[in-house]
Length: 266
Figure 1 (cartoon, one colour):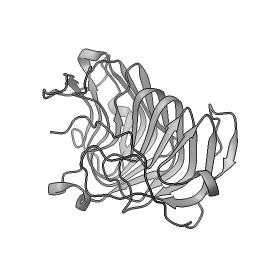
Figure 2: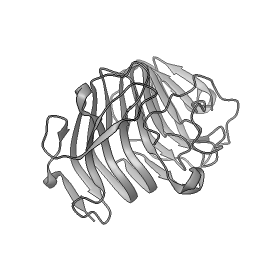
Figure 3: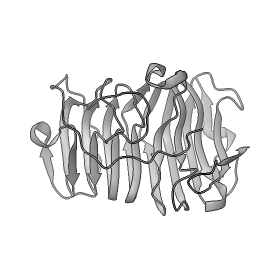
Figure 4: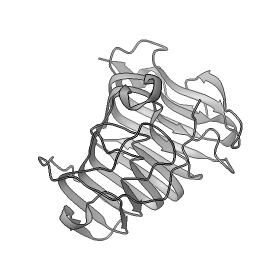
């Protein structure tokens, strides 16, 4: 079972043309300057210490399936990207945050390839604000999609907030790496005002032994019934070469800060 992606640091080589624009949601950013998306919003780009507004542009690389080691479509270094669509056939390893505090605002993943977004290296915080991600099982061998968001960086926080919607068929919304090299923690997750409008195996997977914590509020899941899907699952994190052990679903613990009243069906 794949519990941890080890993304490539390579960059991409192509981007697609502009599509219809999508509206922006106003919010603050840690970066100090803002630029239009025509020049800097392209597949394979690295964006550092700034905000890039893509204006609804569609970009992408390739998608050979959910094989590990694919390059990111965009790399953020203490930066924000907003109003962009990741092409269905070009999702590769999505958006990486590799340093500082990053934000992906009003991003639409037309289909997830490996992962939609990953917090890795020395990234300290990654916020997914609004937007949506669709996962088609045809991109996953055997029709078993793995996860939407991957969290490898230790002592860091991953936020999914402000109306983000997961669609299609997905394994997990978020997973703290179960078997990374030099694995450890803590890794923290915040989910607030998120909708799952599709099929998903679980929302969050935390490593109990590394002190991870998932805080989940205002979560809406299509067809939710208690226990299906799992909301917060606790694991034993291990080092690369071993398999992480699952303890099960938990509520109101030090690692799973979520009550049943925080989850509603529609």
